[in-house]
Length: 162
Image (cartoon, rainbow, N blue to C red):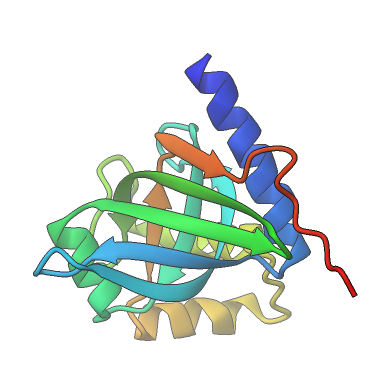
């Protein structure tokens, strides 16, 4: 039952994410426990070690979101298109030059960053340059394993009246 709900939720992430350029709101926790919010590009892909479905994004090294995730490795991503939305919450794992992911060697990191970029709708015509920029910026993959999926209930669609 839970797996079915997660699978249905990830189907919604794919639909809603694709409808609005894979933009999502990322929510992490600041040191004081308050939410920290940022807009990111994110997509769905298989975890590079376990193969389980994850929602992933790429974060620039040295950012507050990475510091927050290192301290409290949990996140929520909210995707929306019009009045439809879906939120995915779960534990977060990091895979980057400053955050080695057990089971993923450093040589596999460029491919993972490319895969996350593509899952979030990105297309790049010069992947060696992309790889160089990712390395220079110490980019890190953020992998969120869905534990809870929330969406607006059926029948609550908003209709514009004019």
